[in-house]
Amino acid sequence: MSLVRDMLDTNPALHRIFFVILYAVLAKAADLFVDRLLKGLASRTSITADDRVIAFLHRPICLSIFLLGLLHAAYLPPPLTPPWDVILPNLAQTMILLLWLIAVIREINLLNDENMAGFFEKDLIDRDLFLLIKNVSRVLILFAGIAWGLLIWDIDLTPLFASAGIAGIAIALAAKDTLANFFGGIALFADRAYKVGDYIILDTGQRGEVVEMGIRSTKVKTRDDVMISIPNSILANSMIVNESAPEPRFRIRVDVGVSYGSNLREVEKILLRVAEQNEALAKKPEPRVRVRAFADSSVNFQLLVWVRDPGEKGLQTHNLLKAIYKTFENEGITIPFPQRDVHIKQGDDAPALKGP
Image (cartoon, rainbow, N blue to C red):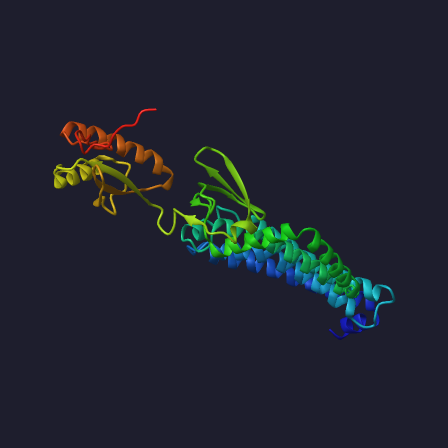
């Protein structure tokens, strides 16, 4: 051992190579430990998260151990001659940084609807919010990695940040509407006012299904199959009625008038029977009937039912009105139309008609 130690002390290059080989052996040992032991233990569990963590950390940890050996060897005495005393350590640190930066970004890219399905089903995170976080996180991690790399090489970031600040002000002034839409989109994602597939009513009165939520705008498809693209900055400051929240079902009201003298109890039973015969309606809550007013020519009823999907509002209203009309016709119940009684006076009290 003393002979080996003397050889290493008298030969700096051999000393450095010895440490590189030592760290390479440690890296291989770590590789075998993860591959033979940790993967076997993780495969016996019913949880898939541990398998993903081990798969993510396996290669970066082993390669980092080897690169740390290069870094350690570069700092061994005596110091390397310029410029290698700076280039080799910085190069090793940069390689370690790139290794983990690429691993993290690759893992973020692998996150998709398949391996995030459990979170989506439990409503722990909205799919559109997840996509936003995924895209923003990639940009932030890449920016942080570049800044860290510049610090490793002792590059002064003050002029860069100063230039970026001036450029940022210019860009903000030139693209203030785009930035307003971007932050408006973030606000909509955070508030979860609506999601793709929901039926909403805009403050302009237009109604439709949300088909796409982007960073800049939201697209709504109306019942006329017309696509409306609305900037997020406008939606973030508007009143939005979400017919699909908090419950997906939607209540519709069908107004019906019957003539005076009709059996009101029988009319109520008929309306409920018509609603129960419609299989497309939700069974819970149960349909209900209310008398709303004594109008000039009719007693006005209102049938209240729930549809499973707000998109069926128009179709089921159509079906109910047809069924009610046919049933009333079969049961002899009259749906009156507006009537006016005209009284004509004759005799001395009648006003005289003047000729031309």
